[in-house]
Length: 383
Ligand code: COS
Image (cartoon, rainbow, N blue to C red; front, side, top):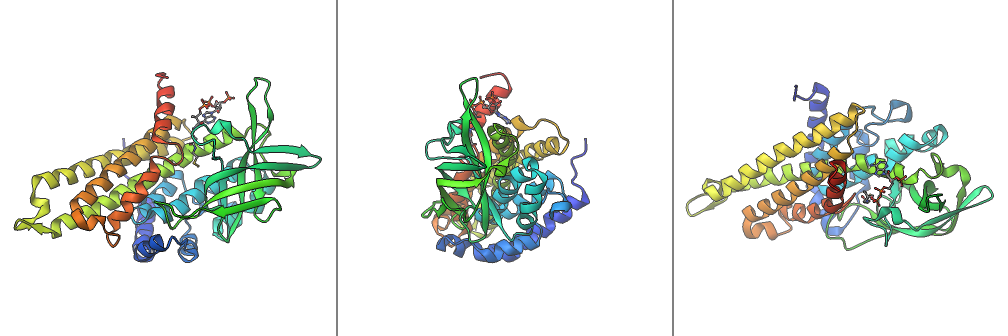
């Protein structure tokens, strides 16, 4: 058994870490405060090759493995959750479905611009009344001649309302199956299509510098050929996409936890109370020891899940485990980090304050912690 990373992975980690420290860290606080999506840093991330990391070079991607993408996401998240969200949502949710399920024409048409960062793409699964119960999606698509006519709405969709969003993959109910369940299919809807509106959502607690939107479809007509893969495969495509997406959320948990830990360790060595650095109090050093321990365990769990995926082995259960564990580790690390910073940890000028808010999304997005426990329980035959 060999736990060492390849030179390629190490080089990637170093370059993304340096980039994040230099380009994202200095602006993260201000963007969070202003609730502003930065096209400038997004473009710089694109130039670094952070979009389409696992996509073949044929479509403009980096053709690296999934672990590489996860390490890159982890390193961005170590510095800022919003930027990591933009990268993660674009790779696994925006690009992923087109890359894995699209036909050649769709891939040629959309992927090069998504990989270069010239445009972004959204993943339209969640609806106001279909969150955890995703199979209950009600957005409807009816064939009328050579066009799908779509009606319905989606909510909490990342990257779908930016100035450069090229479109969204939308899960639609396209009929009823013989077993009485909904027939669900994915349809590609380009931005600017009449009847399709994306409205940015504001006043978020977390990921304030990432783009989140509500989508509305009112008699929105798109060509019949915009169907992604075979009709009726939409829910499986979405679930498979989420298996990969859950690894990204896990990477954000791991990276965020690492960021909290490093900030807390540094501060605890500098801050003096009762005549000595607070790290010298056992109660504090134990917190840091727990953080280091859990981060190590989280990294092993996540990288093993990536190894399974990169080896074409089933990884659904491990993705749910990694997502669940890494997000809960970040929750505990952010909590300890704020506690160690005392009153200063409650102030926006300290990054741990932002980490503390940003971490909450990880226990909710791409399947709540409760849903991950359902997925794991089903895999082990306990449900
Ligand atoms: N890959 C491919 N197909 C899958 C799958 C997976 N990982 N998991 C489930 N499916 C299939 C099932 O095989 C089933 O197929 P049939 O209807 O043909 O039998 C179908 O999808 C529905 O699955 P299931 O019967 O298990 O549906 P449930 O409603 O009981 O539960 C859960 C599905 C709860 C696991 C699912 O709805 C889920 O993950 N919900 C959370 C959604 C989510 O993460 N949203 C966040 C979006 S933020 S981007």
